[in-house]
View 1 (cartoon, helix red, strand yellow):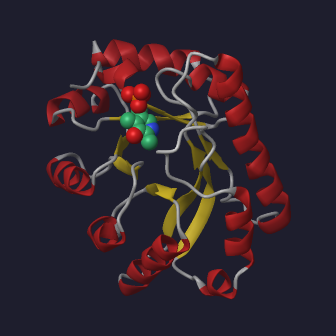
View 2: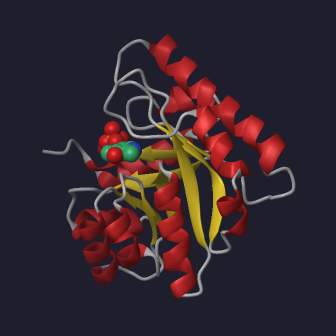
Amino acid sequence: MIKENLLKIKERIPEDVTLVAVSKTKPNDAILSAYNAGHKDFGENKVQELVEKAAALPKDIQWHMIGHLQRNKVKYIAPFVHLIHGVDSPRLLEEINKQGKKIDRIIPVLLQFHIAKEESKFGFDFEEVKELLSSEAFAKYENIDVHGVMGMATFTDNEEQVADEFRALHNYFQVLKSHYFKFNNAFRIVSMGMSGDYNIAIAEGSNMIRVGSAIFGERN
Ligand SMILES: *Cc1c(COP(=O)(O)O)cnc(C)c1O
């Protein structure tokens, strides 16, 4: 079923939307089913699981770190991670830059915004990001590259609310693009949308969706 689920989603989304298959808690053979169907982008939310899977699975897989990242664990994924979605503090960004410098790598990241009405979700608000991007510290970071923004909507059946939250994130993206990244073509990713809301997210401007259970089945 994994291959069928994957291909069905890929068929239905626009070509310029990247699908990250979220494989957290799922075994390597599930990942290989998707890989053997031609898929290369996978997302994990725990560093140890990500590192173990990356060591065991094909080297051309592009690993996305989508979960909350602790600073003391950045070093384990710095050499190979394809994109860190969950950058939610200046200190985390500083640490990613530091680890990138050690291994002479520029690490691609997304800035995570708090767009949901729920307390528990991580992320910056817009003012904090403007402050960060205007800071002297940020101007000196040579080993990170900000590729865009990421966010999670409130877990609710209220589709209008979800659409409003995604629209806010897309709007932040556009304002940041025109003020801070006008001449940086790498700043182009809006990572939003999961199994339950990726259609709404795409309608509101997402070009990267992170889909787990709709591909691999429910998690325990
Ligand atoms: C688990 C997770 C997803 C995927 O969730 P599904 O509802 O299974 O599609 C997407 N983004 C993040 C940050 C996640 O932790």
